[in-house]
Image 1 (tube, one colour):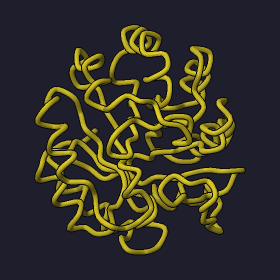
Image 2 (cartoon, rainbow, N blue to C red; image 1 turned 45 degrees about the vertical axis):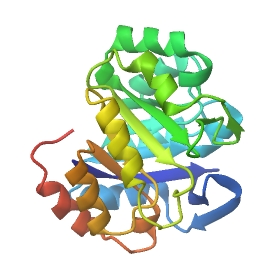
Image 3 (cartoon, rainbow, N blue to C red; image 1 turned 30 degrees about the vertical axis):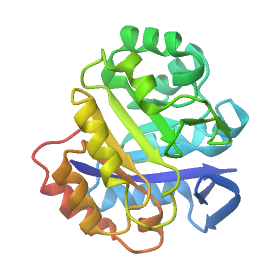
Image 4 (tube, rainbow, N blue to C red; image 1 turned 90 degrees about the vertical axis):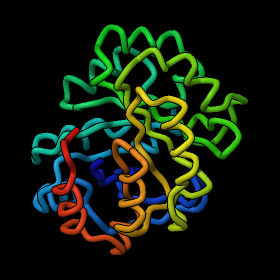
Length: 245
């Protein structure tokens, strides 16, 4: 398992939301491209880039920022937020995205997402399945779907090695620790997928636990921005991994 730094974007700013609430937004006085360069200079290799403006608007917003980060670092960037069409996919791939993160469409256009995976390959995608503990939340976590992770995964479990980024919204941005039992259950139920943890991580001990239970990766945002975990420490943690993404 490796840890992946995250940058969340609203209006070209680095931000964090509390439990996915756009009305509880913290802005950080960091230039996104500069922050990505700092991440890369620490030896880290991957970046999770979230277009929160795009997720809310239902269209790509921060493509040019992603392009700048790809051009000015060697980071492998996965990009999510606002992806709706195959043209969006093509645009992101052409502009340097290593992987595209698909969220709401997994629920609202399942057959379409499956067709993309079949066409482009599992390695080009991360499915973002965000839950409040009962149901998946969609459209930038603003709406409920009435569908659980387990129900949706019955559709996608045919794709071995598909990366599934699961955020427990109740933990996101809270620093209360990750939902270890939830990830244990998901890994047990769907062992052929690559489970990526997100939400609540605030220490290296949290990362060690997630590694122990078999998570494929973990995304970290607020803990880095608030200095609870340093980029150097994160790089050292990743150097201990038995492989790479």
